Image 1 (cartoon, chains in turn orange, green, red, purple):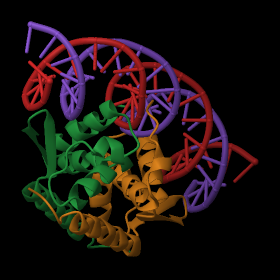
Image 2 (tube, rainbow over the protein chains, first blue to last red):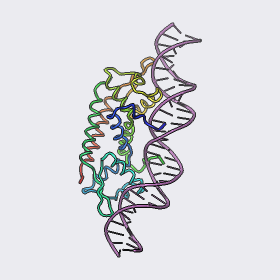
Image 3 (tube, chains in turn yellow, cyan, green, red):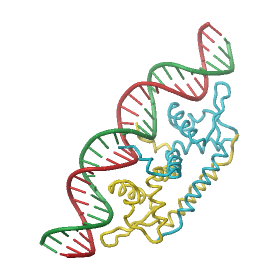
Image 4 (cartoon, rainbow over the protein chains, first blue to last red):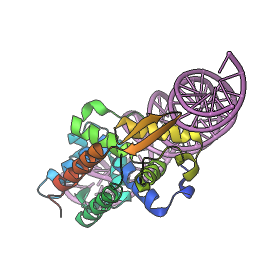
Length: 107
Length: 107
DNA sequence: TTTATATATTGCTATATTACGATAATAAAG
DNA sequence: CTTTATTATCGTAATATAGCAATATATAAA
């Protein structure tokens, strides 16, 4: 069906899946890395840096914003994107905790 | 297009994206959590536990196996799945390192 | 006001994903 | 060998995603 049966899973499972989904595209990984590499908040050289069309980048930025991983501040006609450090750390902690908790038993 | 332009990204970015994609489904999260909760390697009570059809579970298990996160040992007519602790830890480290490295600069 | 620039939105196509019924494959049990 | 149980694979439908051209929106500059 292409549709995930979210109802049968709990909030934590669905939340983790959403986070992983946002991160499951190399363009979005590249965007995050590029934004973080700049010394200051970076505006849209992103389109030049990554080899994708402007609407595509804009869509990816929107998805990253959807889980609050990045933030866009309007500066004149440009928008300045930067990583939301608070949420970034929260997500890191959440994923780490998932890995840690799920590490217990094995053959 | 629905097709990701993997060529324009580097190996690390693509590898991270693949890992995140495997984890980006709540059924697969639930399967991993269920497997890890059992004291011994659990076989296909997974189908009973998760509310999805057997072929669907089988497909999800295949995807988890594709990045070596779990392992299936054939025991008679049953298959005994368990988390591959070595790869599990490797993935945890890789993701953590991604989060750590990408945490540097921000507004 | 007009023009130029930066970003977002819309609409579309191609491909991927999720899910399941039907069926095949495998192996233990009879 | 046949039956039964377990898991995998195939085929298919519905929906999601990635990407882009065209266009809209917004703001600075002229």
